[in-house]
Length: 203
Image (tube, rainbow, N blue to C red; front, side, top):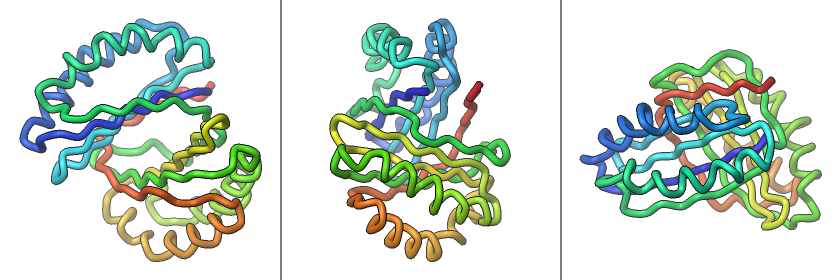
């Protein structure tokens, strides 16, 4: 599968208006497009950040949806959006244990790597990070997104509640250090979000 990630920052006081637009007009627009496989909306209420991820069955379907969404995105996100960044990825790993819950937590780790090491990174995540994540209390699901051309990636871990995510921080810090060295990646960003909704049809 393939994903489009939209990362938005703005005035925290205006965040709810953008969320309402995404959950109504935005969802309707996505569901009309062929090969749509689901979406997730994640927010940081304190700082004023929003991450929206849409899932697509094929790269062509994701690309074909870009024009429609590009034209409608800014009006939907106003007046909240101060900055908007859009990135496209291939889904290298997706593993679900249980459905995430509204109010749960997402930990997102951004990395950079030599494009030649993309498969090494994916295999390290699959064989090393994934088994550890499965053993964490409250773990719901995880995904690894990669951009093979630019050598960039995003790893996301979903937890059923914020307390479980917080309790995993120390252990995950050490695991992140070891896995980054093994996979030859550089961690360039680490963020946590509240889960508003996350539904993916992987079939």
